[in-house]
Length: 310
Image 1 (cartoon, rainbow, N blue to C red):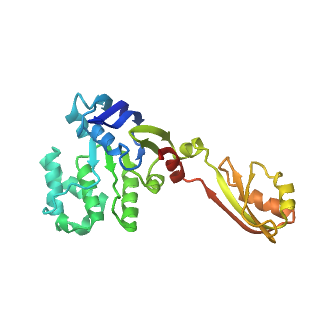
Image 2: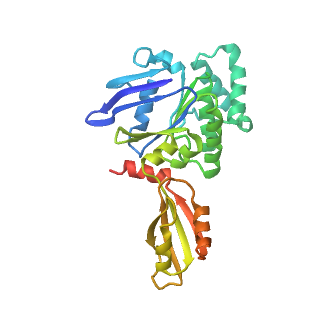
Image 3: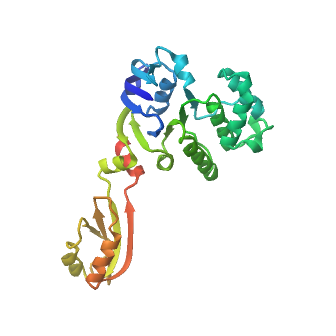
C-alpha cells in the first residue's frame, strides 16, 4: 500500500530523513517511533505529498507521489499534530467545508458527515464552534475531517499529544476501531501508544531507520528478557547449590546482605517465557520458604531507549 525506498530529505545542511526504506501493507496499523526531531513528521509529510523528497521513491498504492500527487492525496487522510481546524466554524459546517474541498459529491456530503459523527463520537458537540471544544474533541473533529472522503490510508502525527489520560484512552480506542478498515501510520514517541494500537513498529533516530518489526520481534532482537525478584528463607550457599537446577533461568545478583535471614536475589530468563511456576515449584521441591516472587519483562520503552540514545 505504501512503499518508501531510499528516502532522503534535507533542510539546508540538516539531514532530516537519511536513506529510509520501508513498506506498509494494506490493513496494517504501523507505529512510526522516534524521539523529537528524529524525522517522523518529515517522513509523513513526504508520503502525503506536502513535502518533496530530495532523493528516493515514495509510492501510494503503486502510484509514485512525485508523479501524481493529486491521485495519491485522494487515497490519504492526514491529521497533523495540531489539528488544523477553523476555530470559528461550527463542527458540522467545518466538516461540510472539508468534504467539498475533498470533492465529495453534494449528494453524499450529509450522509458522509453523519457517518463521521457516529464513528468519531461527535454527536454531543454538533452545533458548537470548534474553538470551544476540548482538545480531545478537536482531535476527534480532525480525525473526522481526515476521513471524510473515505481514504484507504490514514496518517496520524502524534494524535494524543497534549491529551489527558481519559482522552488518550478514547482516541486510542478510536484509532484501533478505524484500523480494522484502513491502513494506518501512527507517529508517536509514546511506547504505550504503539503497544495499544499497532501491529508493527518502525523506529527512526537521527533521520535513519534503526529497527522495524512486530513488537515481539523488536523485543527479541534487542535481547529482551524477564527479570525475577525472589526472596527465600535460606542461606546463600543453599541457594547457590540448587539454582543451577532451574532450566533457562540464570542467577542475576544478590539484593540483600549475606547474613540476612531472607536472601533476596534476581534471576534472569532470556527466552521471554514466564518461568514463575517453575521457580515456585523449584522452591517447594528444595524446601525453601519463598516470601516474594515478582517478574518484570523488558519493555518496548527500554528497547526504544537502547536504539535511540546517541
